[in-house]
Image (tube, rainbow, N blue to C red; front, side, top):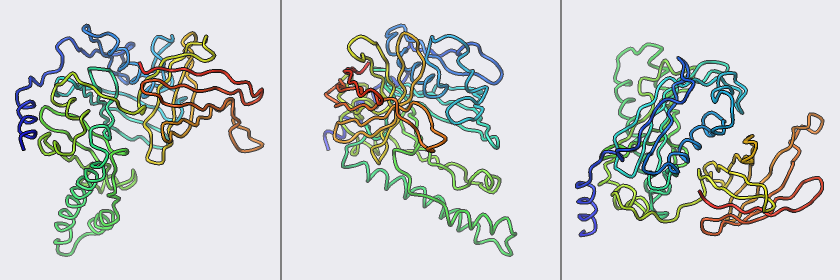
Length: 356
């Protein structure tokens, strides 16, 4: 009980404004279709560099300072998912002082246009992206997911009661009822969006409708608010320190982190790992610091061990990707140590990386 009171007092006593010298401007060249955030942090430029690298590589598939227009792939649909992606605005959210939360509004157009609103959350002590799972004790993750799922189900159930109470419902209402009764509600922390507020954490679960049914979906996305006090008993030490304003950081996994190092002890590279999925799979982007051309990895991370494939090209004859290299490495604290093997020559090169 005393620990809970102390934590509450720590949160209540904080100034929830972000560090005063953290500012956000527009990435250039700004245009009507491309208003994208770029962070400056005069107190810690290295943190700002990590945040900007993550945002630009993750959202634009552009390595900062690699030349050319950073919006080229997004504007020409020559990105990895072959969609035109536009960014219309961003907003910095008021949060506890250790945290930077940015809301980004845009639109993706493939077979059809689809608006989106995404949130990116960063630890201002390190510049690392904040993974939702890291906020909670390992034994509490399923409990938190269960609470989220219960609230989503209740929101849908309450609305279904209203719809079913209508006398002589129109066909549109019947279609709504069918959509909500079939709605997917098994959301997990790995697949849910979230953002930090002054005194609460908001999870945003996906809506019940696909694009074709969106006009029928009066509920839309499920925004679920939890006060930090409500979540306190589930938080990990990392999560408590982050939210309370402590400078104690602690170790977190490699997901969504930047690493820097060398191949063969002489070729400097930078790697950005994606989130580690529930099935242990992940993707990553790396580039040689000299030419800054993105190269993709795909692999698995099991018991602190990486199994990675670097693809060379897709064979139309074999209908499969032909590897360029196979990588095996171990996570040792803040370092990743292993070997990069050329798929054709079978030659091994050392791989040594360290968390930025």
